Length: 225
Ligand SMILES: [Zn+2]
Ligand SMILES: [Zn+2]
View 1 (spheres, rainbow, N blue to C red):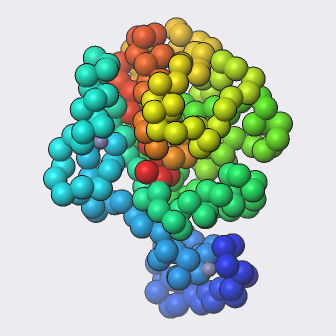
View 2: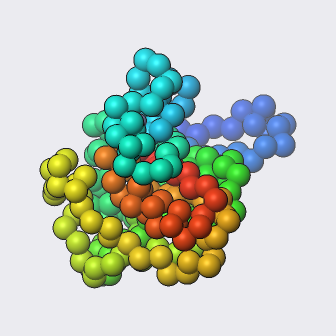
């Protein structure tokens, strides 16, 4: 088998230990070099609001702004830093549409999601136009067949990509989502799932709808931040 990212031949040898331990053997999908090019945020000191790596575990400046804008605070957990390696991965997976690459992070992402004690997992949706051109929702691709509640829909059929907006434009953007079933979220603990946390704007819009409909708690997770 070859590394999904650099095509180098993968060496995978079973050791006696692998054969004796009752745990499931996970075959690597990418080589060690590619794996090490990503920067995990686990174990780093980060902002409890948005997973930004920083020296102290206190709300960062941006999260303080969110706290003034809404009567609640999102607690966001991200698995990896959105650095050059992750940007390249996202470019190839999401924008160039190489659907196979979703496999690289599935087991880790699904395991992190499964650890959160929530009643429902709600993925951030893509527009109809994105669905037609890309062919998949990149967020759902990253969580495979984990059961989700598709309670959010994009208000518009197409939207200007967040990646094409500058920071100010992103923060000023209007509510892009519609909640399809308000009654379903009342009193529920909900985990929102996105691929990347950039400004937080998308997740705060989504969480706002859920809280307005009576959700008890909304937390969020993304592959990268
Ligand atoms: Zn590689
Ligand atoms: Zn923060």
